[in-house]
View: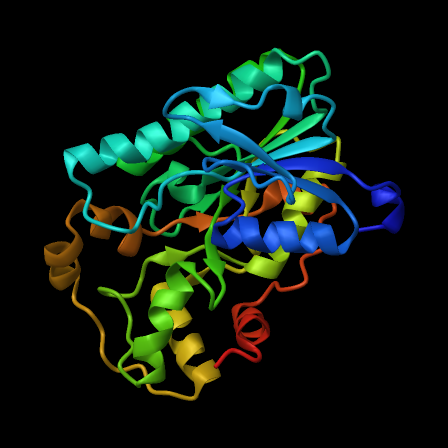
Amino acid sequence: MPDRDLAKPLRIAVSGSSGLVGTAFVRFMESDGHEILRLVRRAAVPARPQLRWDPETGAIDRDGLEGLDAVVHLAGENIASGRWTASRKARLTESRVAGTTLLTETLAGLSRTPPVLVSASAIGFYGDRGDEPLDENSAAGRGFLPQLATAWEASTEPAERAGIRVVKLRIGVVLSPKGGALAKMLPPFRLGLGGRLGGGRQIMSWIALADLVRAMRFAIVTPALSGAVNATAPGPVSNAEFTRTLARVLRRPAVFPIPAFVLRALFGELADEVLLAGMKVLPRRLEEAGFPFEHRELEEALRFELAGDS
């Protein structure tokens, strides 16, 4: 991205700043001299630039959101941290819809609204589609995740109605040894106990964490981007290929597949919609807007993200 796109320091509020993506994004932007205001549920620490909010009670520091250059909204309960009971599904939905609604309604009512809101979504919007190529014009799939993502994205409407440019970033499998799916895979793979999930034919649409935070910055400074934007690398692969590539990078065998019935027994519905589901998601809008991916191929991306990780 040309330096002129960020000629002046920006003031950006970020929710979910303590998560994997939020932590990386805050560090990335602060290293370039931008001011980050973290939206936090705990009492704000005076020595750090933080704003108080609590989606459960509807509390939010409205005055602190005035006059920002951008807002990045990443908050939401972890999808893959447990079986999807009815109560857990309700919590997952509430954590996204209530928080997004509170934030966007507040932004819409400000005297000085931010020009842009980058709001996280997920490629789960598309559902299990096999090897069908999917771009931002593809319809939502069927199941809990598509329903959740649809409601999540719809919660940004107050900001859109107020004239704020809203980018709904549909994020794929984020590659980082510090969290997410890859971090969970590393221990068994390093012991030589890794393997494909089920038959391994399901397509994994991934993105290197380094490219994701750059894509978020790109979304902030690119006026042509609005609406749904797929945040995935151009080279999705099957789970079997992902497994082979990770094993090769780690110099370990990958000969212990986990049968689908075992995954279903352990994780229930989550197994079918996350672990065994295939989504071949392509970043059409990012590429059309000229975003320069630095990590387009899986093996190079894994080597970059794992460099120096012990």
